[in-house]
Image 1 (cartoon, protein in one colour):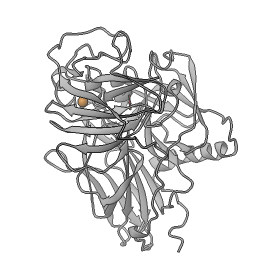
Image 2 (image 1 turned 60 degrees about the vertical axis):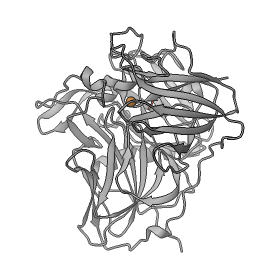
Image 3 (image 1 turned 90 degrees about the vertical axis):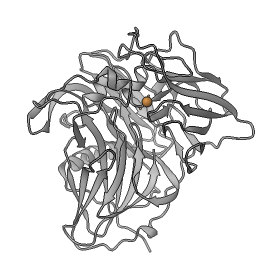
Image 4 (image 1 turned 90 degrees about the horizontal axis):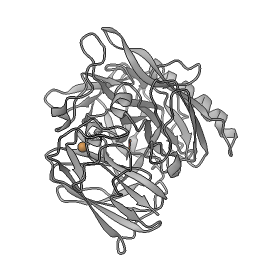
Amino acid sequence: MPLLTRRNLLKASAVAGAYGVGISVAGKFGLAEAAPEPQVLKALKTQATLTDAGATRNIMTWANPGGGAGMPPVLRMTKGKPYAARLTNTLDEPTTIHWHGLRIPNKMDGVPFMTQPYVYTGDSFDYAFTPPDAGTFWYHPHCNTLAQMGQGMTGVIVVEDPADPTFDSEVVLNLRDWRLGGDGQFIASFRPRDAAKTGTYGTVRTANWHQEPQYDAPAGGLIRLRIAVTDVTRIFSLKMEGAEATVIAIDGNPVPKRFPLDLLLIGPGQRLDLAVRMPDAEGAVATLEDIRGTTPKTIAKLRSVGTSLKRDVGDLAALAENPVAKADLSLAQKISVVLSATAENAPVDSICGTLGYSFWAINKVPWPGDTNDPTAPLAELKLGKSYVLQLENVTPHTHPIHLHGMSFTVLSSSTRDVMPLVTDTYLVQPDEKVQLAFVADNLGDWLLHCHIIEHQKTGMTSYVRVV
Ligand code: C2O
Ligand code: CU
């Protein structure tokens, strides 16, 4: 039985806007295998309405030409098909784009000073690569990130696999907060005393730049809900009220075994793909909630429309595994990575990206920013060899640790049962030791850092070199 009809688009405007862009690009690129026309991403400053207090000024985003300047477009790519983007910078500061989770060549990785020069005001940079993996990913700058990401520059990437099972509908959620005062304008991006703890939280929560948006979806249908936590600080504990939600992928990769969503912790940089079975009754509402902290917070709502399609999540075909090489554990060399706090909290200088403090360290080295000078790599790895990162968190805080350029498999944890998830970002809990295996199959210098941006920018950053 063919499970589902072809994907239909949602009526809700934020999503429709993002889709409009995605589809025209996919259509145009689908024909040209070799050298697709670059999708122009124009970095700019604008204003946006995020609260009832009126427009927030000094928003930073990327706009498609003619596409209006709101939330960064959801970029649609196809697994195994060339993609190209031209970043043009009209901000009054330099920037780049990092493609979080995409295993692409080093020179496309978007880390200033390490993989490419800064893209200065008025300049452009052409990115071109072929995404090897399908799934939900995201993009953001990699310098002055607390300002640029904090003020808007975080966008979602959907890499489609034409062989994916079809859903009745798809909703993409870009989850992030904003540090705004009562007048709707930006306030100080961080407080040093918070940077030394969990990071400084935003004051206004949004999904797709709206507070508690609601999207329509077919009653009784199966919805692919793609969630990206692009916030600089907040860790979510996600739950779905009023509908059955099944976790089908984490951080772009299919889970080894599907399971019902029940208070799953998802940190900055991470993604979650859910199959949501909509309620049968027209008008019924399912609510995605964050249960971290004291009171549950509504993130977004899905409302059933039409007569029930009567789907069964059990009929949903599996997602194909991504072609990530399996580490050879009998030969893998172990690399110890200790995440700690540091006593040196004096201001430090850096070319790019420091907050002027150092509170955190990897293997006792507080790494001030995004420059590889003068700190040496954490480890030098041989191309094609297997490694196991032995990550140990000796701090009382949770850290989403992200490796660029390669995906790892979670082997074991000292504090909990883990699935052999393939991922690029692991949320290490206090006092947890975890083993992450990978094959060093991508040449170059690759950052390894905490994705709580205040932690990253105050020392919890390092890198590995694959030669
Ligand atoms: Cu989302 Cu260094 O990355
Ligand atoms: Cu951290």
